[in-house]
Image 1 (spheres, one colour):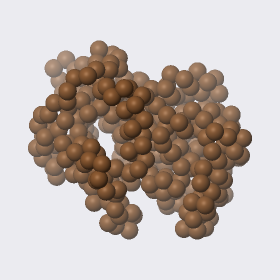
Image 2 (cartoon, one colour):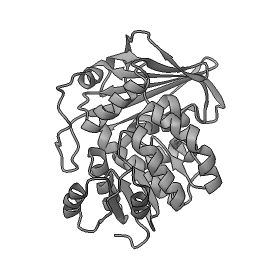
Image 3 (cartoon, one colour):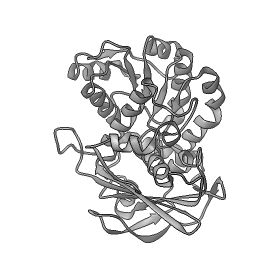
Length: 343
């Protein structure tokens, strides 16, 4: 392990948190594992003997301060982020260290930009929300696809998932978001988030292989409606989700992910297909890989490594596409993610 200051993983014992701890270990980065359940943390530490255990609760600021003491950065993997995001980023700002989270909750991500931009800018602390499969990957792909374009009329982000076995954390976060918006749906159009009661519609989407043509639910809105417009002049951001995955998520008895390989990944395959349009010209960028939860780990850890190395493009609260060189970042995710970008 590295002898430099450690990265704290808050929510380390959760499904995604475990992938993040494993990725930090794979890269030789010293790791502190944290969260509210001390017994579960000790059990995880038995799997990774070189990690340091520091329990902390989001309603106990002093415990969070102790968990982050002397650390290089913190990755927040504990949802619902509507509950954990504020306390953990505030602790990071007090400690003067970078904060990265893997939130897919639209409202929690919007709040991070709205509530902490000024404090992060004044502290000169990088804060990157939604540095995950949902929110981060789509933002990087749209940014890379736009290239030198300064504006676009619309950005489509289509998710082709062969299945979706949601974790308990995904279900809890989804319930919080559903309650916060009163059951309404949300879209980003005419430069703003707008809530509505329109029924969902379906259409066909021609994904690159190996998926091909699939039926998708249009306006299955994800965190991209926060991350992309935070730095790109795009009038409309539209998400689409493969019907099979949406139905899995909707079913209450869909089982949790089950490992099928040595990395702990499920058999879920994904293709993220991005299409941006400006002045009648279209550009496309795609990414494909295995397991949306597992792939969040290299996204978040790569972000932290780049921040600590000074390979950033801005300061304060910023999405992945604003903080990093999008095309270079995407290529660095091999072999976990394969990308095809405009030439």
